Amino acid sequence: MKVLLTEDQLQQAIRRMAGEIAEHYRDRPLTIVGVMIGSIVLLADLIRLLDMPLRVELVQARSYRRNSTRPGPLVLNLDLLSSDVRDRDVLLVDDIFDTGHTLWELVPQLDELGPASIRTAVLLRKQGRCEVPIQPDYVGFDIPDAFVVGYGLDYNDLYRNLPYVAALESGEIREETGR
Ligand code: 5GP
Ligand code: MG
Image (tube, rainbow, N blue to C red; front, side, top):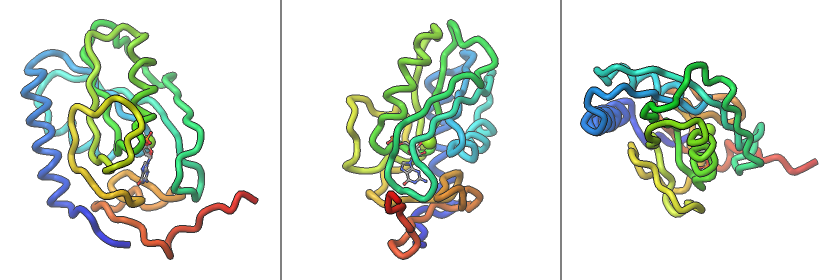
C-alpha cells in the first residue's frame, strides 16, 4: 500500500473546501446529503468546519462488489432521507468521483424531491475516468487512476478507518475471477 495523501494534506484540502462551501451558501440553510458508506469520514470532518445552519442526511449508493476494484451495477437507495429537502439547498457529498455515474444518477433522483438547488462535493476525483457530462462543484484532490482506500474508502469492506488515503498495489488486490 502506498500513501497518496497524508492526514495533514487531507485536513488542509477539507478546510479549503469548507471555505468555498461557506462562501457560496453564506447563511442559507443547507442540507448536506452524504453518500454512504464511503463519505462518512469526509462528512464528519467537513460539517465540523461549517459554521452555518445545516442538516445532515444520508443516501446509499453501491457500485463495487466484495473484492472487485471495478464498478458493478449501481444500486441507489434514497429511503434513508428523513427530512424534506423541498425548497432547500442540497449539497451532495461523496468520497470519490470515478466514472461519475453515481452522481450522474443521484442528482436527478434528488431533484425529483424539489430542492431549491443541488451542488456536489467529493474528496477525490480520478483523472481520465469520467464517462458523464457533469463534474463535481467542489473537489479535494485530483488523483491518478489507481484503486484507493482509507479515509472512508474501502476494499472488500476493509481500510475505511485509515486516517490517510493510500493506493493499493497489485499484490494486495484479489479480483474475483467470476467463478
Ligand atoms: P463512480 O460512480 O463515479 O464511477 O464511482 C463512485 C463510487 O465508486 C464511489 O462512491 C466509490 O464508492 C467507488 N469508487 C470509485 N473508485 C474507487 C476507489 O479507487 N476506491 C474505492 N474504495 N472506491 C472507489
Ligand atoms: Mg460510493
